[in-house]
Image (cartoon, rainbow, N blue to C red):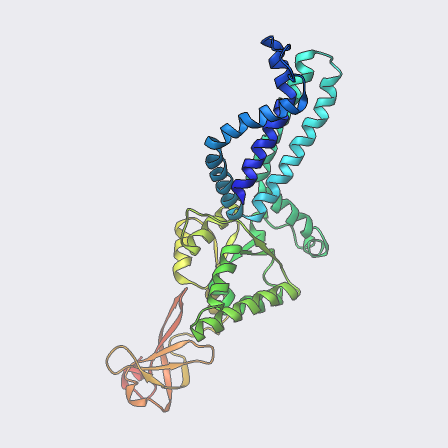
Length: 367
């Protein structure tokens, strides 16, 4: 179908150019005495025949070029096309206004040629500016939205740094769900940014054949819906992608660096990668650990030993908040409640681990 359209276009262009230029060409070569030479129908047919011959050689390259452009446009993010088109319209508008001023000069070359050049140059520059400065334009629009009631309430507490307004959510923190509760409390300010590639990964998880993954993915989509409907920070979905980067985590880090924002995650490995790239991270696990009750060595606790540990004769118990307690010489207490004495606490971004010994153990009493 596309090939037929291109061929028909060649014939129409050839016929039009034949009517416009062939009579002048015949006059130049003294063919005016030839019958039917001033007939527009003859000129149109001759022009169409000439372009029909060109059509035999140019159809395939033109069709391939159109298909290539179609693929590029379909793969391009919507925001790129939108802001590129806006920039193109602004550039063409400036060129149109400039052509009026040039028309008043009454200089043949300037009034006939320069306006066309201005349309080409300003249109191209407008598209490039709109395409490459799309993030700045998005940021300006978002800042305008934040100048509403929420921003007015925040003015009393001082202005925040612009980069700190953007909190980019990764897949793990969305599935975790605690981000919605934190957002509802009002402790998380600014704009929550969900890149389209994160949303796509979440959708793939929700469509997984594995029941557990499917449940997690649907939970993540529900959490996003809750973030959009609840009172709290605005949720911004951005279409920017990095085709030359395969890993979603690296895309997130790169986008956070471009936007000057924070990565919000509970993924320990992503935390380390972001630190290596100089991107600030808000780790939900760090926040959860920070608000847990402080446990110090020598404190007594009453726990239930549920399984054995990795090392010899160890037992493992858990607090209500999920904190693991490793009990030395606690293997014999599996399935029973026991009073233990804390010996040390290990705190990391991956979580908190408490080491203890049974209270009736002699080494514990010695401490």
